[in-house]
Length: 422
Image (cartoon, rainbow, N blue to C red; front, top):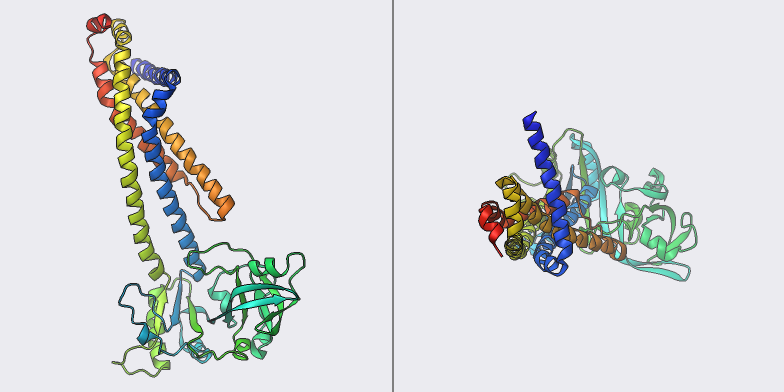
């Protein structure tokens, strides 16, 4: 029962200390502002950088996921980074073809779906007197929806007959729709690509900006055989790839090993002959960028901690001034029976409240910036709950560290000398 009463007394003391701290803040607004400014700047630097990194990482992961987490990609260009990239060797490799795809479909056992996709040169797409410039085109085979996640706002994907016959049908992205059909329904209309008429049979749902520049918003999709009617698909002007999705429960590295063997057989390569193809995975893209994000996060912490260090000294200085101003009050409290830890808690809470006010202003500033970026720049920048908790914990920690010495000195004052102090 006695222990319960002591807990209630401590909780009451904490509450009274918090109220006292808020009154102290109100009574000295200029001093409060100056003392919390360093904390505000420090929390802002740390949380702003962490929010940017988290947002970039999420956008990157979403872009990678759209390519397929369990997808291996066969093409002539390996996904490598650095100054030793041997482009002069890779450019002479043959592009994957529809014949390669057919043989892979016959021989590969670990694949759930596979498709050939070919990047086409950028083109201007026209409808009547309206046009959309610098539009990316992709020619795809029938299995494309099985290896690349996307949603259609309207319409449908290509039929088998349209694929086999090379019919001039097209699926277009939301940006193209906005440019060519601001007031009209786009499906079943005819547009012109490189002077040829294509019937619009589907519209991609808006995806937004992508770090890997693989959004479908400014893209048109046509069948591979259709593209072959007006482009030489084995030229260096186009890049083709075969995307292979692993069966459920099959790891991508196992699929990769099988694909290597089958592709070497298809290309008739000898055992000691270097491969003339590359097999890429989405993890090759995300790992180096995550390392970069870690360095950026560390930089944000370092900059923020310097500002917080200055702010912490400011808080400690203000708390020493506060102790000196209230020395007689402390003496009276102790003479009436207040224990040392009550005085310690009172000043510690005041220091923590000061830091929390600074941290809250920093967090609020970050939140307002994320709202502005979302609204005006259409970027998915957000303040996560983890970063809010981080900001609060850092503020509380700085409050405890910077306020402990002044609070401890106040708690150890002699009541008689404290009352006599002027």
